[in-house]
Amino acid sequence: MQRAIRIAAAATRRALSSSAARASPPPPRGPLAPGWGATRWLCSGREALSYDVVIVGAGPAGLAAAIRLKQLCRAADTDLSVCVLEKGSEVGAHVLSGNVFEPRALDELIPKWRQEDSPIRVPVSSDKFWLLTKNQAWTLPSPFDNKGNYVISLSQLVRWMATKAEELGVEVYPGVATNDVGIAKDGTKRETFQPGVELRGRITLLAEGCRGSLSEKIIRNHKLRERGQGQHQTYALGIKEVWEIEEGKHNPGSVIHTVGWPLDTKTYGGSFLYHLDDRQLAIGLVVALNYRNPFLSPYDEFQKFKQHPAVRKLLEGGTAIQYGARTLNEGGFQSIPYPIFPGGAIIGCSAGFLNVPKIKGTHTAMKSGMLAAEATFKSLVEGSSMELYWENLKKSWIWEELHKARNYRPAFEYGLIPGMVLSALERYIFKGKSPYTLKHGRPDHEATDTANLHAPIQYPKPDGHITFDVPTSLYRSNTNHEHDQPPHLRLRDPTVPERVNVALYAAPESRYCPARVYEYISDEKGDPKLHINAQNCLHCKACDIKDPKQNIEWTVPEGGGGPGYTVM
Image (tube, rainbow, N blue to C red; front, side, top):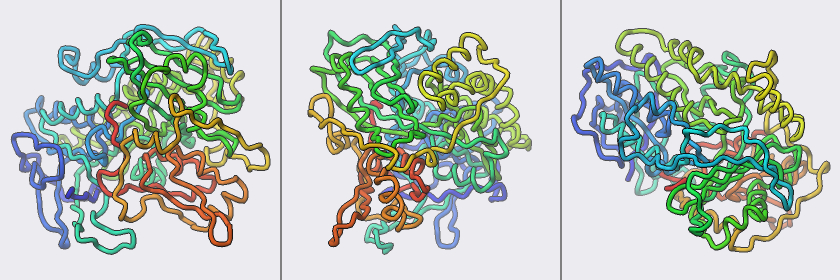
């Protein structure tokens, strides 16, 4: 049984000396084994562990931070105990990205990675940009510059990074959660109950990815968004499949992006087709969550997209092998929060460093983790302030890159054609140095129109070959949760779904969720009642973002639950 972790991040926590007990060999990945590199004691009947640095999230940002911390320790001939926690059953299990990887940050972190057995093997060989209509694909000048970049699986990359971190002495623990384990739905303790371990860090770095539950609470409670760039975050939902396609259709390194059909001209989004190695094709659709029509279903739009003649011919004769979905930050420069809180800092996509026009955020996430690691090291070893992270962030290439890209995403508030025109001006005329900064529109949950302003959308039935129903796709995501556990999807007001969402918005949660977690079932009177299939949850967090009244709260389920990605 995996042990649960209770995060206790505060500057006033018990300080450990830099010579805290440290096991020489790195521990094996798996259930938390107390005693590896941490001070251990009992606190109020609960086992407690203390590290110098606790990193929440084993994604690119968290692992880059961990690696950088240990590199600094070696260079200074000192030591800090560093622990990385991951809620997925294994490192990479919850990591999804349509990823054309820019190696800039990795070049700084591990300069000799090209001489090692990394999963970065397929350089971009061609770069195309299509404007789709229902039956045509019009080639436009590509706004991307992917020379020197690679087509990768991000879940495979972070697994490799985890081995690099462990070689340096970082303790990586997948399958942990922020609560006790063995609690039944009704709150009683099952026979398998085990109390959580209270884990304390002198400094805690939050690297939870987009819409991290701890990060969002800290941003809200400490008003970090207002202390940063000031604007709300805006999001998109990415839905992705990985296929094995026929040899004659496979072109390793080929990159295609599209805009237009099947999305309407008021909905921002686009698709990608990336040729990896081993005849694999990553295909996905990204839909901005400020869409207006409550009848729109991102999942069904993705299935519809695959029916386009230019896309279908690639997939015919192939096999879909994996499915997943995840939200991503699109607020960019305007939405960066002040990233420091008492006892720690927020890094990576939890803070929101995605470069929207590049459609890339891994390199910026990694760099933010490295900058936070350098500030953390100086804070613990030299007694300086974590404010150094914020200062260096504003001096870094992250800041410069996101400032140049700041007007692309809000330009599309005016629709597809105006957005493309304004984006062209930004790229070719102003070159990122325009004298103005556009603002984002309404928050995503406020953007949804009432149902009476739109007609229902009739989506075609899946054919079982190119397009699929949700249960079939979920099977390919390897999603699993312990059924008998407290719900991790919580309604702040249980009356809102029927009283507001059904009455005004025609039950949008039954469509925006790409796993059909939310469905309405008629009661004995024939009235619709919301049923939550939490075991289906892909941890995409679209519900936490898009619900019109912000009535759904996504929380962390029992450790190890969720999708089990391997090639995403």
